[in-house]
Length: 245
Image (tube, rainbow, N blue to C red; front, side, top):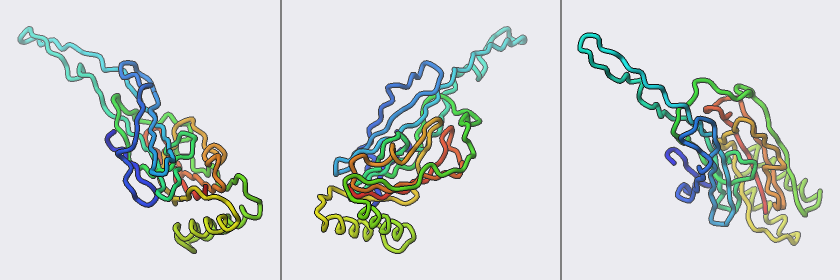
C-alpha cells in the first residue's frame, strides 16, 4: 500500500485504517483490474475508492549466441519487467462526522482526503487509454436534501455559498448549519466538508450528485471538476463537499 494515505478534512491521520481489497487482481494474467480501498472514521462513516491496476505480459526471453566462445547467454530482455503503474487516489474522512473517494472514485460518497499513488506489479503504459484524457469538465455541481423543507435547504445553500466564497471558515459554516437545523427540531449526527481535495476519476467511471451524495444526509452539497490532467489512465479531479447528517 505504498504511497496511499488517508486523512480527514481536518488532517487527522487515517492511513492505518485503510483496508485494501486486491483479490480481483490476477498478477499472472495480463489485463486491467480494479483494487478497492476502504476507510472508516471514528464516527463510523465509511469512504471508498477504486483504482485501475494494469498487469503487463512478461517480456520474452531472447538467447544471444556468442560466436567467439560458443557460449550462449540470456539477454537482459529475458528478465520479467515488473514495472509499476501509478494511480492517483483520494479518500476523505472528516473528523466532524462526515466522510466523502475517491476517493476515489467508487461512486459512493466517501470521506477522507487521500492523496498519493499506489504502485502495482506490471508495467504502466506510456500513453493513456482513457478517451477523456485532457478533457476539462464539471462532473456535477449542486445540492440535495432528505427530510428538510425547501426553505431550510435554501437557507443552508446560503451558508455553503458564504463558505465557498471565503466569508466564513468550514467550522463556522458547520456550526451555523447544525444550530439552524437543531433549533428546528432535527437530530444531527454529524457534519463535514472539504474544499478542492484531489481525487482520481477512473476510466469509464461516471460521478453524479445522486450517486456521490450521502443517501440519508439531511443536506449535501457537492462539486467535482477536472482540468483533464492525468495520472496513468485516471483523470485528476477536484472535489468540494459540505454535509449535515
